[in-house]
Picture 1 (cartoon, rainbow, N blue to C red):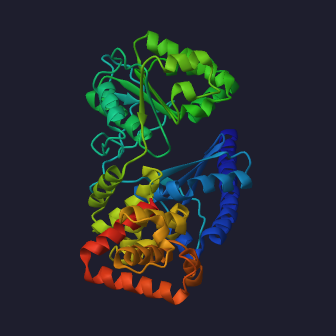
Picture 2: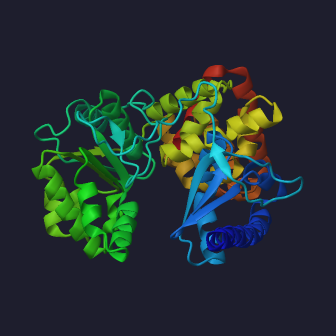
Picture 3: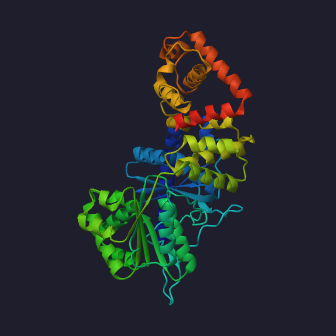
Amino acid sequence: MTGGLEGYDAVAEANAQKSVLAIHWSRICERLKAEVGEVEYRTWLRQITVGPVEEDEITLYLPTRFLRDWVRGQYGDRLGALWHAEVPAIRRVELQVARPTAQPAPGADAQEAVPAPAAAAPNEPAAPAVAPAATESPRQAEVRSDLAAPLEPRFTFDTFIVGKPNEFAYACARRVAERPSSPGFNPLFLYGGVGLGKTHLMHAIGAELLRGGKVSVAYMSAEKFMYRFIGAIRSQSTLEFKDQLRSVDVLMIDDLQFLIGKDNTQDEFFHTFNALVDAGRQIVVSADKSPSDLSGLEDRLRTRLGCGMVADIHATTFELRISILEAKAAASGVVVPAKVLEFLAHKITSNVRELEGALNRLIAHANLFGRPVTLEATQDVLHDILKAHDRRVTIEEIQRKVAEHWNTRLTDMFSARRGRAVARPRQVAMYLAKQLTSRSYPEIGRKFGNRDHTTVMYGVTKVEQLMAQDPAFAEDVELLRRMLET
């Protein structure tokens, strides 16, 4: 009878925890609705279900990989902040794909559900099976799920778009995947700005090594490494943690800059690093800066990190951004006009992650509402992203660029001369000033030698007419516009 009562108490406690989490989630949902609006909430966030809490991490489930990736990219940080504000003990949010066994009740925004693994979507590779720790010989290929994060099946060498900014890093990653622990390539240190492909290459290395077989791979963020290490200290299992980590064939640590200022974790990583390299095991590390620029890391660790192959990933070029967008659009099955892809490639230049996020948003909008992707729809759907990337263009800058393009003097922009060789560039500059700045016609007129606002209006209309009649002239004006916007 006692055992039965204990079992009953455990179930009751679990149900009580679910009820409490549901209450917290209901409050968070109300805040999300207020922040993003009812329509956006229902489109993207309503289908989230609450999973278990383990230590300081809560798991949230979404029904598809597409929704999970979208929510992670657009709302991941905000969800983490809201959960931490609601329950201070929760510091991280993990988003996973799962199909709830019970659907949320109609009108319910927050329902606890027991998740079951989701089937792979059509034409979408299934997530790799996680093998248990190998006990037989020879050793089987495995992802060490007992201490690492799973690999993302989308991130392979085949889906990585190569261009001049990343070709060296790509070549180094392929070399390590084909011949781990090669002289001169251990460790492999990848660095570059946010969203340029470092994580993609690390997952691709892991996928390729697992396909080759007979290796164990452990991939985790530096933050995860720190939390695992702290957890091992608290549970008095540091020796087990060290043995597990130092038994893998390939260790990959993402975003190493997170360890800056964490001296004890740095010390543990340094000893793990030495143990693996001395044993001929491969290490792959990524960070936002080169080893020599990571001030705050111990000198001995920076020196060891720089003793292998260091490969940087530069900011993307326009050509690379176009190639990435074309590949993603083709894979989506949605027709995205070339002019829309060019527009996005010109406007969003900071990182690939944001570029892909913008395209995903367009594709989702087209799928949800059954509307074609057009330039006008793009500007409407992505207005918040585009506004953040708008560069403030000055009238003086416009005048200078136009004068250089038509090989005229800058002073001609303000002079009283009316010859066509002078008047036409001046009118183009007025047109661009109206298109690219928020200045009124009178304000623009004052910048062009105190001309009347009607003169500016005439110049803008004249340029619009010429662009409609002369494709070559229109191309010249469009080229100038792009140069000024990027």
